[in-house]
Length: 237
Image: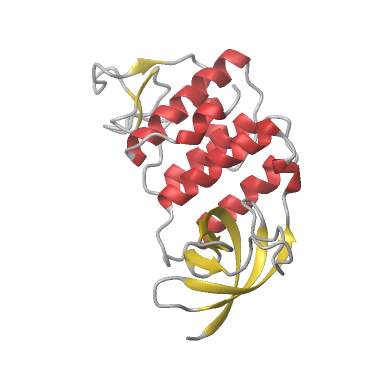
């Protein structure tokens, strides 16, 4: 049963027996990993709060047959600022749920790990948690192979600007290609979302554009993930 080192971010935990927990982590080198933290629920546990959700940790693990075993965990960043604010916490829960949905066990993706780490760093200091979530989800869905098109028609490639967006067709669509389900957007919404997707965690936009953009992100992500994100309902808008 080989010993290995990793760094990871705790996505969720689940009780196991009387004193243990199963911890799900996104690691930099091994993808998503499920591991047992023995005795973590005891008062004198050596792990303490080191394996709470959102925490970025250095780990030492044993490779198990079904579940790995955490033998050591040291905090790199606690992201306590996220847990201390309801708005940030609700936004963070949406981010972790989305990552848990997309990441596959033991499938390495450094880009996905760095996207999550960057989102948590931004969330810990922002006054606009919903905007960080929208930016994160646009980039995550793009990494998953469903990058939305904002500057050209998603069906025929005709350069925009176009005024209608189709979730099923994959983005903005021209009048010739649009289906009956394509929705008309405010002129400022596509460039706003394109800015968030291209490495910006915030962008100036009126409240109505932000609301429209957020609704569009939710519809697009849940369509392509093929199920709703439960945590989204708790996030203030």
